[in-house]
Image 1 (cartoon, rainbow, N blue to C red):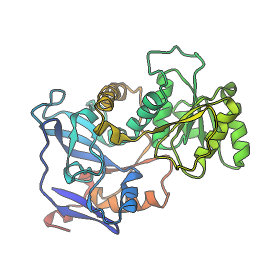
Image 2: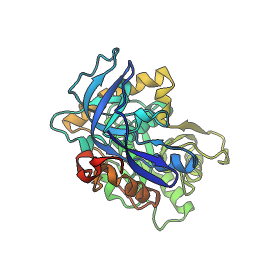
Image 3: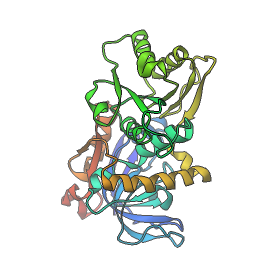
Length: 343
């Protein structure tokens, strides 16, 4: 198969063996894959790292492990593979191995391109809201109950998925975003535009939202001083807790009554049995919601040239040139001229 092998200064298509799934895994023939910021951040953090990367995939099951009961050969699926562990889990390839716990069925009427935009960011949103912050999941709270949550970063993929999950749980959602149209279109009740505001103005405006009842915060940005702003907001509203999409700095100001609930790192579902059960439940639910139209992917942008376009896609992500969109690659768009041998 063709696969993109990454190094610190390049991303090149190579011919590599098709991988084999383990006992609790499935082998997916990829039809579409999507990018996440962590794909380039892994290389920046470890300049000596060389591997097939990428973790969001969608396609057809072609082989199952002996313990797998929930999927069969021929099933349409999407899922997240294992982050930074082995080449067989690399998503930027024609085939990838995915743990059955972190996959979900894709309905016949849904596109693989849209499905590939969901897995990792959706799970971050679910972990942050319902595991870290302990907010009531869908079905436990009536609409208008008054529980509010702040989603900081309402144009990011994690942000729009957190907004949708929070609304499915009948929470009142306040979103901070650069422009209000995107977050509003995914269901945010109040949107605060962070442009043209000083930090102190932003703190005051957020603290006044939801009738001053902001006590739970999901930071889907974690840069540019967002956590410091969040801590100040919770200080004004009488305390609460926050979770982050990435690990936070150790230098965050400590305020009585304001606590960190940790980061929503998807790697936990691959090391913690309880978190793995959490992932299985929430991915199963995602498959249902996605099929019936109750959950929408972030707006997708198809990058030209399939696997051959991954290098340029990651460059754009690193340069912060992508806003309010998920970069997706269709395997079928990979130029046929690359299939005569190693490129």
